[in-house]
Each structure stands twice: as structure tokens, then as C-alpha cells.
Length: 290
Length: 239
Image 1 (cartoon, rainbow over the protein chains, first blue to last red):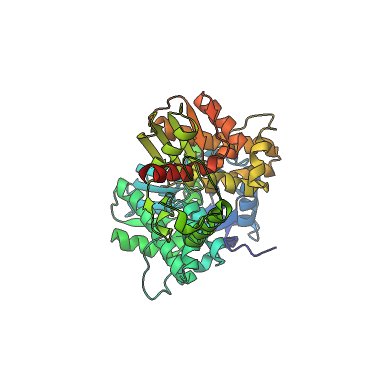
Image 2: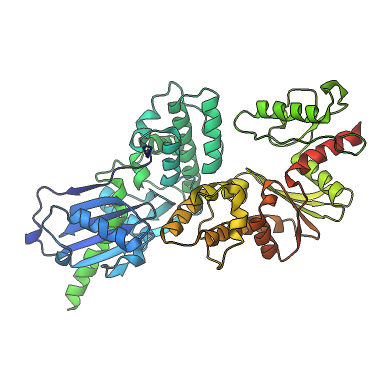
């Protein structure tokens, strides 16, 4: 079988210094996205463990896999988690979640934790959608715009290009900055047509890094038009998988003339993190009622 | 074309080198007709790659060429729907083959032949077989994605869920038919409706389009030649 260049690596992480056995509240958030699924486990409001896995064709199973991977090697089991919130495209299909909350609310909440209370505009670049979210100092959504109809400006679009050019997807960002001069962006918005355009450019003798730079710029331009419709209030942050691709991130900053905040955590876990934070609030509420 | 009669017609795949493709098509047409380039009095070129034609010529828009070709073949047509590989068009035309109004999609693959090509790949079925396949469908299933890239993932998921291929093929055709008819409704659909372009050869799409428009949709015998025919008619008319 030929190599699949779009296949980003699945991973998990565990806090080296937290002991879950002494925690009073253990909550989790599961973000079942259209392309990837994340699980985040919090102990007393601190990030204890997380994972990121590819979403399969079955949402409940994808949620389970993400959770198992986050629990992996921690000694914790699902029964130890007191409240689970599901979010993302497959949120209603998380079998072990007590509640489902929209990914817009969760991303804002997660970004508020990751970037601090000064964040006001969040660009979430997901696998099959892209959202521009405005929020207040508590991470509460004040307005948002979403594109989930078109692959342009989504992670899926970048996967298509990684495959087309046979470049591992994690290397695209760095490679896009190896050009001597910044090329004009790929002119077709539609990913299918941009693919044909890229093939014509390669035939015309463009090197792969130049085509990659042109596509990163096109993607940046696409999401900037979405952001401009909501307005960008500082501070500004980018979440989702593309948040890790500096080829797109730095070109968005350049076009917007606004620097994005440096993430303190993996940008791809923002949704699941927000869900876990909501779970924590819900857990505390249930305790104060009882 | 000579005196309103077609001498020859050829088709080549454009591929990535438009210029080579254009030359090859022209040379083959000359050879089949048994005429030399010098015998051709006037050349009118149409299509997205029209400026690539290497010899002296006049260019006309695809919309104009389509309207002219359609009225020649089917004088009762008032609405032309042309779905090619990377473009979709709706044209309202007069009895004289003049363009009254038109609408165009060249920005999004979802309303073009590229969509069915991508879906055929995902289904692992040759694209020519997709139409026949969807006619074997026993039940309608919805297709949620509009975007060709997302629809491809959806088709893969449907296959994983063991959905029958004919039912998926039908959903694909219903999806693209709905895109096309909403585009054409912008200019108003007047009888008779003639469908041309490569996708007109896909019976599954034609069925879906008829249902969506609630009208009879006519398809000429060689729907992919209508644009070139229109260009040749314009060339005759002007010489």
C-alpha cells in the first residue's frame, strides 16, 4: 500500500506531576470531530491527560477509543471519572457522556483556559469546518460564524494537498517557508479545482515547496474573509489542527496584521478541554444541589 | 462544417496540457474530414481553453456557442443546462438561438462533473457506469455533504456502513441534480429544457434532474459536442 501522507500521528499525553487518586473532582470532555476525536481528563480543574485519535466511521467507537487512549498508562479507569461532557460533530453519540454541549461553546471555553481571559476572537480550524468565534472574558460566546459546507479553509483541504504532493502533513508548515519568494496564492477556492490548478503549476515547473506556499496562502486568505465578517477583536487565537501549521498561521497573521497568541497547550484539544471544563462546572453544581 | 453539414467531429481529453489537446483535436478533425487547414475558411473557438488555440481564430463565449448549437439541434429549447467537468451553466435562449439570460458556476466542484468523478472514485466504479448503477437503486438515502471533498468522505462512511452502492450512486446524482436545479432556477426554467455537456450522458443524473425540476429534460445524441457545433455555426454565419 502506498504511503498516506495526510495521516497525522495519533498521540496521548499525561501530566507527570499530578496524582489523580488525591483529586476531589475528576471530569472529562470528549470532542468527536468529523476527522479527529480528542479526550481531555481534568483533575480538580487541571489538565491530567489527553489524547487525539482519528475519527472512524462509528462515532461511539471513536469516542471510546479517544477515552481509552487518554486513560492509557494513568491507572485511572472510566469509572473514576465523575462527569463527562461530549462535544463536536458526533457529540450526541458519546455513550458514556452525561451531557452534550456544542463545539462552539466548548472551543470558546477551552480557549479561555488555554490562552487566558484576554482572548476575544477565536479561529477554530477543524477537520471539516472553520469557525470564527467571539467571546467575553469568561469564555462565553458572544457571536460566531461558521463554514461547514465547503472544504476550503479546513483541515481536510490540507490533507488533500499533503496527499497530492506526497508531503507528510506535519512538514507542510516549515516547507512552505523554504521558498525564495512568496508566490501568489492558488487562485481556485474549491479544493477540487485547487488540486487541478496545483497539478498545472507542477507541470509548469513549480517546485513542491512553492505550490505548498501558494496553497497555505490561499487557505489563509479564505479564513481571513470569514474572520473579517465577524470582526477581529484582540486578543486573537487559533485553535484546531491547523493551529499547528505555521505555514497557514503565519500567513493569516500577515494578512490580518494581527499576531495570534502563542498557545500553551496543543491547539487541537481546545474543544475537548472546554467540554471537560463544562463537566467540572456541572459536577460542582450537582454537588452543591445535593 | 460545410453548408450546414457536419464534416467531422472529434473529442480528446484536455488533461493538463490544454494546448496539446486543442491541437490534437483540430488535427484529427481535419484528418477525418479529409481537408487541410488551408481549406478551413473560418475558425471559431469556444471553451475555457479557447485562448490556447494556436491558429488564427475568433473566440466566442461558451454560453453563446451553447445557445446557438442547441437551437440548431432542438429549436423548441428555451432553457439549456450545460454540465461539464469543471463548470455548470444555465442558459435561457430565444428561438433564434440568442442568449436571453444565463447563470454560471465555475467556483465550486459540487455542481460539476468533477463531483461525480470524485464519487465514482470513492465507490471504485468507472464514472461511465455510475448512471446505470444508480438506476438499480431500491431506496433513496440522503446525502448530507454539499462539498465534493466532504461528500467523498461521506461515501466512504456509507460504504463502511454497508450501504448498497446503487443507493449511494443515486444519492450522488440527487445531490448534484439539486445543486444544478437551484442554480438554473435563478434564471427561471422555461420549457423545453435541453441538457448538454458530459454529464448529460449519465442517465442517473438525467433521472434525478427530471425529478428535481419536475419537467421533462431532453438530451441530444452527442451532448458533449454542442458547444463546438455552436461555434462552427457561428463561424458559418459570419463568413
